[in-house]
Image 1 (cartoon, rainbow, N blue to C red):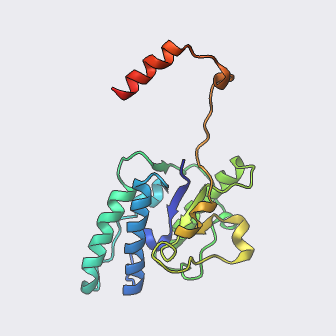
Image 2: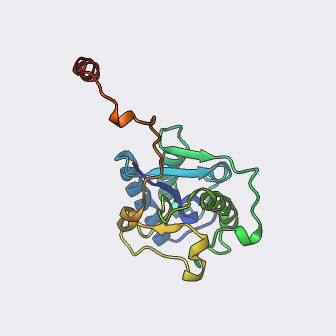
Length: 206
């Protein structure tokens, strides 16, 4: 089963003008993420607050409108649809002090709604650390460069312990299954008559 991927601020936030290079990276990465989602290789994770401003677009300069419109459509379909595999969390009641905010990559700092993203991811990381007592990592941030053919940009090492891993396509294999499967005690050792197994098989193939 897949890990949970949350988009970077640059993928989600189009509320400020971006360069052609940035827009191209966002567009290509969204295409890659969509393919991985359709293959059930990843699921997406958003907070309700992030979803509220995901469609706040700055449509100038006019020469970028074509690329922005494509990104708008892809973001709408990927992150705002009521599709299985889109996980939305309401974290309004979770407290997040300044020291709990999620670290930002240098190129994110002070840009657009990045501070809101940092606050929301800080809440999410706080919950994540409270329930994950293992070394496994199953929530990560999608890097627009790592999913568009370039090197994945990282955050500084001194903040890595209070942040989610930033991943590109090549780092996906390092993530674990985000879902915990609980079965009834003794289920795997329970004997099943052949006639019952045959009956279930026939129902499945019909």
